[in-house]
Image 1 (cartoon, rainbow, N blue to C red):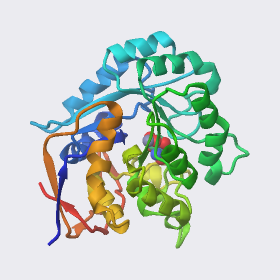
Image 2: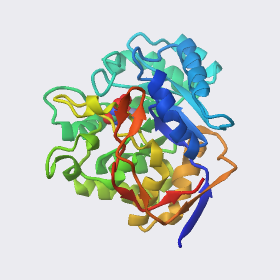
Image 3: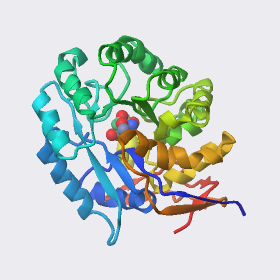
Length: 344
Ligand code: NCD
Ligand code: ZN
């Protein structure tokens, strides 16, 4: 049987929610990951250092006994964020700040409405070396949803990088050949996270044979040529600029299977197995450890985890649902199998 032992991974883009939902999902990440960068799009969003520190305590309290999992905290930028807030965040150990264009995705209504009005904040981040995490999609209603990432690159990202060439920036959950190319060609201060769903599925998985709400996330799945470009990016010459960020984004079954279903795919229960499947398809299992456990720490100036995990190539059966407070949470590949299994 094929066995793969790698350094314990980290998840550089994770939604763990709050309250009963937090208690239901965070043990899955704690089992696989050493650390995770926690997304701040709660209701209300995590916009202050005090809110981030309190959220961190709630996450720690929801961990299984003896867990070594470390939540790393982010702040949610709004039109009201100030340079003083950025200095306070850096001093308090906040790892990065998140830019949601207003209206781009789940709980982003308090996001940034004018990137250029935020320039003093972004200049302070560049000065302090605090990374900006970008949900890279424009939100104008006239732009086709499948084009929103590529248009964001031309309209906002390129001008921003020209204006602030030293800003550390993570292009989050990239989905297109255009994004992969931009990151590969940019300086070492630019990196990207890639989700398991964008490596494993194209938009047919969303729309063929009936609408598949559990394959709906933002940015939305793209056509096959883009998926191929992402597989190439994570395994190619510039692979060190791409790292693991699941964007595992749980929503209750009732919120997903609805006339207006929420965006978000829950993958944290089997994140590393899903990535192993994708890297196997790319013929690049030898690159999985760097993607999952080395490139992220390198970008953030941290050291990789010291312990290891072991994956075996044997089918893991996925249950139909997990409990989620009083609701149910449908995982990616519910009732199906994944070709790899992480051992305890
Ligand atoms: C995320 C969520 O549900 O919080 N949803 C998603 O589809 N990815 C928000 C996000 O990261 O865009
Ligand atoms: Zn996300």
